[in-house]
Length: 173
Image (cartoon, rainbow, N blue to C red):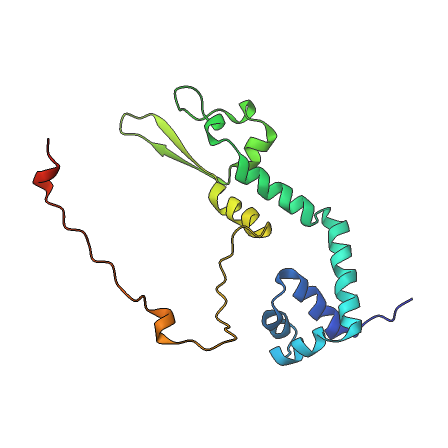
């Protein structure tokens, strides 16, 4: 059986797996950020991280596949199915469980005529971006490393296209 890590290291591991931010986890247990980075290089800390992550997956019954499935569900919901034919929002008991889970918020408003309307919110585009990023189809990181020489000629086009002048009167029939 593996030896239990020191209390401060154990606390660091529990803090670190919350959001995987070294600086925040280090500060939460009274360490400097560089000390947290050094801890992450140790084999015993890596083993403790693996064990803590496994325990969290078991405890929450949530793993990366489940998170991806939930994100895809929210990204792929057909928003039109949340409404009746007259575009009024369906009652909750008329929605499937997946449709209900795709709704991230609701705001009720009283209209001038006294009737109530509801505005529902889904994070369809944000969740779709997460799925695309996971699949490697969306890369929002720019690589600024360059192995060769960069010259001004490579960055500036040889000729700059001029705007085309169009007489709007010639476009009329």
